[in-house]
Length: 460
Image 1 (cartoon, rainbow, N blue to C red):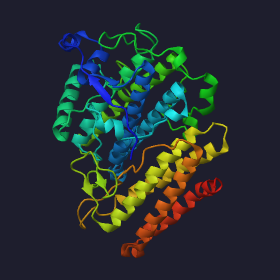
Image 2 (image 1 turned 30 degrees about the vertical axis):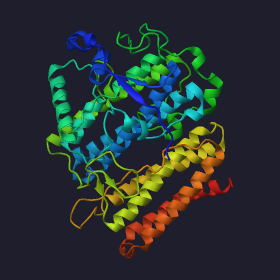
Image 3 (image 1 turned 180 degrees about the horizontal axis):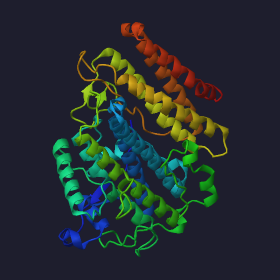
Image 4 (image 1 turned 60 degrees about the horizontal axis):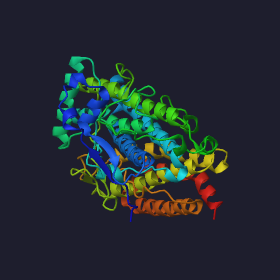
């Protein structure tokens, strides 16, 4: 049974604030007007509130990450330069969301150590009444891009034409999903407010909106010792230093607010300048899509196998093709193992050899591991031949992290056992005998896994 998750309550702003003319309030207030102010129901202190909201932020970033990866997988890069550029753009955004997820781990680390790390995806977020965007794995479409623009939109859009376009896209996103998506910035603004030391404007955001809880801020005593943080904090260099991978170390209010501002700026853009932000990049992909320059593969919507956790998407597609189902099960095990490996690495000191080995293993699990599996599933039929293709299901079988080293190593062993069973099921299918690409892929995955298998064996 999954652990009990903190309950998130979104408190709407006071009626007097809600009735203020949009042009007369700050961007922060406008973001909060669209969603309310999130807080943790049982938080007795600002620190409790910050920890709970950061765990919610981790789940939001994780969910966006896989939705963007799925959308990127649906784009055909061989259909022309614009189509390839669109795929590269959406993939880069997904990788940067991975950076946001890691940065949130550093924020949690600063408030209480590695025991606070949270790489979950569905527990708090799906249950939140103001979930920014329910998890639906969709191929690129006008409606999907409308959702992505809506959740990444900045609070301030000075250009009237652009603002009206984004408002139209928001309405389209609501109609296509039956849900009202809203910007992620409302969540981060609430966290930023708690991190700033007083009610006075602080740091790069200069947040001082009267509808936020007065005096509800962290104190220096709420932060772990800097030397303890340095022992465990992760950074972009550990994960390959991909361009735009923002993973800041946090030790106090100032560095915490800087990290939160960087996440918001990369997503929605610095106020008054959205160039190179996720918001602007998705608008560029949308323009190319509207010009019929983005070609897509016929992936199904939210593929799933029967024994993975239930989907939030009422239009999810069960993989009834037995061969696609078998590969989908293997994908879910490896994706779950990747999340565990990231969490395990971050739980170890930066000078431990096992940490470096686990990061190397996790990076191989990402690429080529999950990448090649995503491509293979995109070529298999979801159901009857000639219909939609399967696509990667991204079923997270367990999003909890063990509480000690023994728990981590035992979880690795259990997942390798599950993977062996999934591989055996694939090889038992008659289709596998003529699937040269699939046979080669299993060999490649086994070779890539061997260093981690040896590492696990060294910790009986």
